[in-house]
Length: 412
Image (cartoon, rainbow, N blue to C red):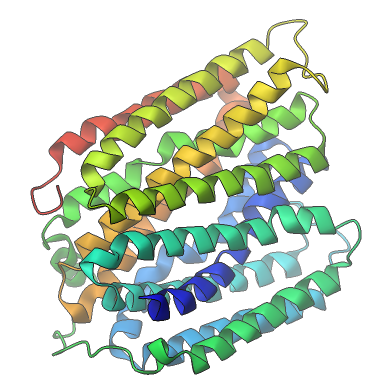
């Protein structure tokens, strides 16, 4: 099993770099420059290429080898990072970033999204049912570790390292990963996909995918299970910044500490699944804990807005705020690993020739649910106020608990 998991870990790690760059580094820097919460939230439009994975997933299913797709997409990511190294931002555009940098970041996400389809297909085909728990732990933990390195790590290094050097380091990392794809034995001889399915087009393909066992229910779950959590996790760190926590301290806690807690949660989820825990009952328990944690975070936010209350450097309130941040990321990591295991189990019920497209459909819906509230959270806070926003996030976090009661027997 280690022969499968090690190359998967390396590739998922580099896949997490663009996410960390744009979720851990950019929002804090843009907010520190005085941009509104609405404009900071709109920076998530850079993730747009991830929503169109279904356009190239059928190509990955039917054209060329997984090894070729992985190697070319990973090498292309290194090339884009090299171009970013040669394009340091000078003058910011209306969105707070130069147009050239925005375009290159979109290309970076496009390359990462293509790599994601090929890599997820490889994982679906390689992993046996008993290996899904450890395999998804490796997937989520390695991805988040990459996010930590490119998010909190870059935020800490920006004062001492230049923009070109940072992106040259990222380019070298991608090219090393491309070499790993070429050399790893597990990727040189992927398992046969069996007889190919007849070509299907657009609406017919979507109907075919949704008709597979458990797909409709899983699609509904992954679209909604992160709505409340993602809205709160996008907004809460920026509100702490507004209440006096410094940018470097927030970068340390939100970019490194909280993500490390998320990795611990993901690892715990994999360990529980490996002990023959079924994903649906485990999700039922963990989502309840997550709802309680968000209720505590909402209460804390209400208290922070009380006149005369301040986040001093040594107050219990400051510690509670940072602890709340970490606890929610820990529970979020546990929920994510369990959900991705559920998604992969559902995709294994599909014919092997359609597994890449099937998993890409679920992963696209999962990302769409996260981006929807993550992008709109700032605008909602600016228009409705943080209190109403967090009350909405709390209600949205309770919905998946009720939805789990409708899980089909093929997945439960």
